[in-house]
Image 1 (tube, rainbow, N blue to C red):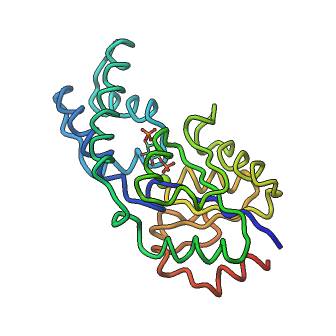
Image 2 (cartoon, rainbow, N blue to C red):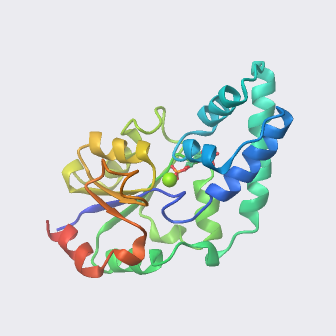
Amino acid sequence: KKKAFLFDLDGVIVDTAKFHYLAWRNLAKEMNFDFTEEQNELFKGVSRVRSLEILLDLADYDATEDQKDIWLVQKNTEYLKYIDKMDESEILPDIPRVLDFLLEKEQGVALGSASKNARPILKKLNLIHKFEAIVDGNDVTAAKPDPQVFLKGGEALNIERKDCIVFEDSIAGIQAANSAGMVSIGIGEKDVLHEADYVFQDFTEISDAFLMELIER
Ligand code: B16
Ligand code: MG
């Protein structure tokens, strides 16, 4: 039976969190704020605009709307400089094996990401041709934990919600998958992603046999 496998991008396919962090940290300096890696955890799966709001809160900084717009562009321009240097070596372990296994079994494979930079990143990684559908930050009006991004992914593949399986590294993303009525698979720490149906440290822990179980479930 055909199922839909919906992949988050940042933290699942590639570790771009480190680049987001560098760009936000430099922006924080302009607010005289020292943005830590620990605080960066709050930004995972969260939209760009919302991330800036959180940063302003943390820094206790009042910015005008014009200043915010300038900073959003500035942050993304710096982020894109890091992305530009990226290549296939940045793909997280065993992602190619899992994608190829699912495609060989004629399963639906789609992207469900909050990022507006998802397409250029997938191109850089030479993975874009593996995705039957791409739903990203340009396509949604409500951010995770709202289920919209995954609902649109399932619809694009014409697969019912209960036959959709989501791979996510963020708490908001797991909540989005759960409220969509989909199977949620957390990639990361068990104690952080405890709301997920399954949790694995990374894709090296996800065997072909387990993927087969999901397909036949
Ligand atoms: P951009 P995901 C999310 O991607 C990131 O986790 C989050 O840190 C970032 O702020 C968001 O994308 C927006 O990204 O600035 O590129 O539009 O994990 O949902 O793939
Ligand atoms: Mg993510």
